[in-house]
Length: 412
Image 1 (cartoon, rainbow, N blue to C red):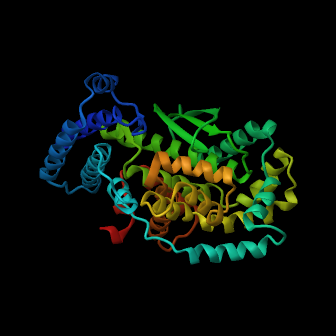
Image 2 (cartoon, one colour):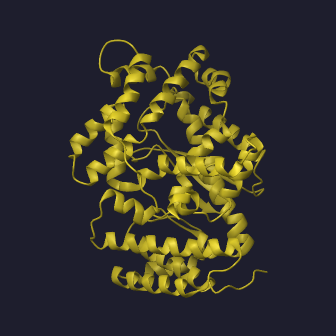
Image 3 (cartoon, rainbow, N blue to C red):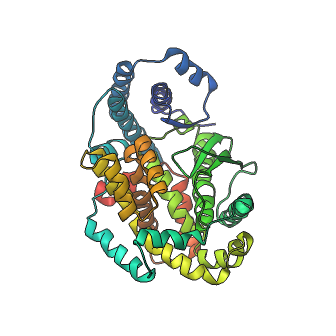
């Protein structure tokens, strides 16, 4: 039996406010598995935005007036509620018409800000890739032709993804204890602005969707298996439910507002989890997934090396989004900017623009989030750099209410 806390009532009100915001923003509530009556109440009431704003401000004041517990975990809960409520307030202001610059938005919603990157940084990576991929034509076309040799055939897509997910699960279960009933359903969809998505349903279950609008390069099988599944989103949500919702009765974690600091932890840990689960990605591709997809295993090493270089351009997504959303570049100019500095085809740049149109500053959560999670884990590993210690620190992070300010000492 859980001990009553002064934070229990604010926690319940926070959940109800998040559900209320979801009535005005269909993307806001990414997951909810709390009392069904609360969801029905939100739908029936449809609180106006000014009322939600007033209630959120009152809840912030109430939590601020509640003494910070001495216990570390309880103090973390106090910070979590305040941080999430303030982010909710910012989202309500945006839905009410307030315009924020890219950096203002990322700080207000996600509790973090990308320090920014110059064209010169990306040009240096392009120069490295240019040497790696000699030949005729623009570099983006050479990279596209190179990657086309590593596309998963459509008739092999389901088998490759399922094998990769099961391997990610096997590796994760060696280090993370999950509820016996945990599982996921895999679906293939089209006409989405993202390539993969995890819809957490509660009771340790997820629906993992794969968008097949564009061809999949084989490294994405590992990426999506770990990011959406194990030890990524599915594991993160299952551990929060297991330890804090069921273990402590903390209802605030039954709702996951997409535009909130939770997302920096969720996306950052999901991306970092790829390397945690597959430190031997090249060997696994060469020995398992390449043969399964009918690709030449002898080319795995060069393929992985090129993709590792291209990954250094990930912050181009943030920089392009910043310039677009701040009005410095038109939509067409931003798409072309992604082709040049993101080294993606026009089709993939168009999909990226659709993502930014929908999710805006959310893009920082993937790369900045990954870097902050990596730095946190490595800082807390101390002198013990073994895989077991890495998994231990990572598992503890996934099971906690830590937020961006907890990852970055400079943010405190």
